[in-house]
Amino acid sequence: MREQLIRTRVVFAFVVIVMLLAGGGFAYKMAEFVLTMYRHDIEGFGAVAIATYLTGLVPIVCITLWAVLTGRFRDIEQPKYRMLELDREIDRGGELGEGAPDAA
Figure 1 (tube, rainbow, N blue to C red):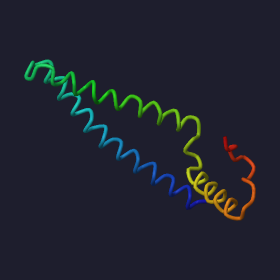
Figure 2 (figure 1 turned 45 degrees about the vertical axis):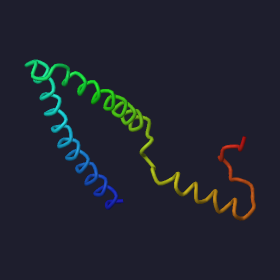
Figure 3 (figure 1 turned 180 degrees about the vertical axis):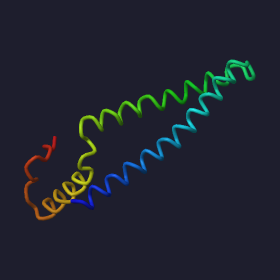
Figure 4 (figure 1 turned 120 degrees about the vertical axis):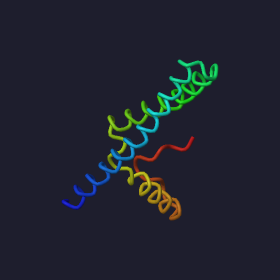
């Protein structure tokens, strides 16, 4: 149990560090784009880049937050084991186990 707590803390720290580095780079690039638009260096260059970044970023952040808040990342290994269990059951010629979706 203690090893799992340590592993969780290490993974969390790693995620925070990666997010800070990536977020810093993203913030720098966004500021650069805004300044490009403000100075009129390249007409429209910054607007397209910002729209492109936000179009990709906003849905990813929303989906990630939804998944974390609803507990989708609590047991990420379970679907793998469930798939293998269903595969073994099918290979034995038996019915699919309880909780499996019905074939339409």
